[in-house]
Length: 226
Image 1 (cartoon, rainbow, N blue to C red):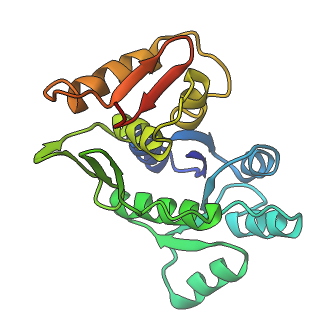
Image 2 (cartoon, helix red, strand yellow; image 1 turned 45 degrees about the vertical axis):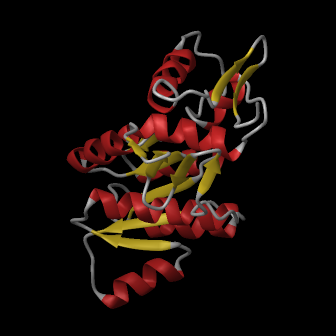
């Protein structure tokens, strides 16, 4: 996902950005309301995390209200130290899609972001995936091949999930850069090749039939076909 974080607290911002990057997401950050308003209105994001209390003359709820009035439908998660029922109601009525109070567990924040993204996309990303004897459960993030459980890093999981959702199809390097790394340009690195190599070692190295294949001059494919 490509995520915008609007948060003035440096400690909270660093904590959230680090966690999102480790989970394989791309994050832009604004430390005040005016910058947050500009980015949210002008850039395409999958989800916005909006701090309610911001420095300056525009707070988080005002930004949300303006975005909704101008037709921006990006899912918005409001972060706030205000935890009373009336505060949460006001946040949701302003146009927020979810409301999380501080302090919060990062795992809960990530789960709420995933839920907002699934809801906006209208796609059931919880459905288990299978290619031959390779199985993935996106809900539990469990991956197995045969009887063997496979441990994947967040980016490896995201890469394999994308390949499995496009099983038996050629997936180009550009498609992977855009959908797994959120790059809409060629970074001129071998990041795709490195991760493909690591993934191949984990899901294919100890098995007779490879599932992850390189299609010469085209890209990659996950398939159980002969």
